[in-house]
Length: 173
Length: 325
Image (cartoon, each protein chain N blue to C red):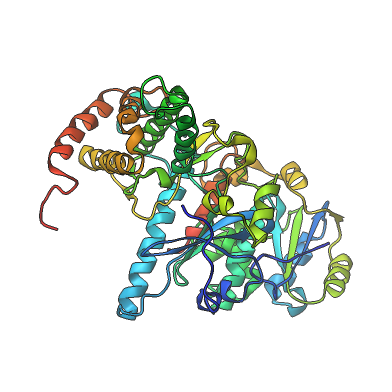
C-alpha cells in the first residue's frame, strides 16, 4: 500500500495497492457492477499498465476532470479507468482496463479517504498478495500484446510510452 | 531563452486550476504573446516538466477565446503526439509515407527528439510536456563563439577554433529538420532558441533518473548573474556540442508535406540564424547541406533538393507567397 501525492493536487491523495495472484476478481467486479458504495475503487487490470507514470497520468486527468465538474463517467474512480483508454467508449475502457472475472493482477486506486481504512478494507476483501507498486513489477506482469492492441501500437510498448500517454491526454478532443 | 522571470505577487492565483492552488515550485521560464512557460514537476515530484499556459485573453469574446485556446493547445499536442508515435502507431499516429524509398531510415526518427506530452486541458488552457535537459542551441553557439574569441578571431571565420564542432552541430540541425519534414510536419517557428541540445544519456521520458542538478536549481530562488544567463548550463559541458537536438515549441506547427511550406520553414530558420548568430552566418550552408544530403535527414535525395530549390524562390520574395495577408 502506497499513498501518492500528485504534484499540484495536494488535497487528493491516492492510495494505491498492487495485488498479484488475486483469485476473487469475480467478486470484486460484482461489487462494482452492483454499485456497492464500499467498493469505490478504481480496480485496474495491471497487465495492461505500462508504468507508474502511465497510471498517474490517468489519475491526474480524472481528478482534474472532477475538480472542473467534467466527469464523463460516474465518479472519479471510474474516470481513472476511462482515462486510461485512448478512445471515448466507456464500456470499452472498462473491458480493456478494468477488472474482469479472470484478472489475477489488480491495481487498486482510491482517491482520498484515510489510508489505514483503505488498506484494511482492501486487504480484507482482495484475496491476493500485495506487492510494491513499482515499474519493475509492472513490467514483469505486463501483457505486451494486450497493450499493443489497446493503444494500437506496433512495437514494444517500452518505446511507445510517450505516444500512449499523449494519446490518453488527447482523448475526447 | 532568458533566465527565470520573477513572478508578480498574484500571478499564481490567475493560473488555471489546479495550478492556482499548487504548492509545487513554478518557475516562469519564458513569456510570449500567446503563452507563459513554467518549469515545474508533473506526476512525480522528481519529474521536471514544462507547463505551457495560454491565459484567457480578456479583450476577446469569451466564446472565441475558448475556441482559439482549445484549437491551439490541441494543434500543438496533436503534432507532438503524432511525432512521438511515428513509426510505431498502427493508425493515425504514424506518418503517411509519401516516398516509399524513405521507409526504414526515416521512420521513427523523430521519436524522442520532441518532448513527450504528459497532460493537457484544452478548457483550462494548459499543456504539460516532458522537460528537456540541456540548454538551447542558441546558448551553445553563443558560448562556443565567446570561447573562440579568446584566441583571436571569430569561430565562424575559417580556421577559428571549434569551427568543426560547430559545423557538426549545424549538420545535426539540418538533419533534425529533415526528419521533421519527412514526418509531414512543418515547425513554423524554427529558431536556435527553439532547439535544445540535450546531452547524451539525459533522455528520460520515464524520469527514472531525475536530474539532481536541475531539481536543485528549480527550487533555489537565489542565483548568480551568470546562472540567469544560462539557466540549464551543466558545468561539465560548457562548450561541448555533443548531444541530440530536440525541437521544442510546436505552437505554430502544422501538418504539411508541401515543398513551399518546407522551404518557408527553412527560410525562417535561415533568417533567424543570420540575425541571432551573425558571426556564424556563413556556416548556415551546413544546415541546408545536411538537410538535403545528410544521412539521418529523411529529406535526403530528390525531395530535399526540390525543397532547397524552392528555398531560392522564397529568398527572392520573402516568406509570404500570396502577398495578401
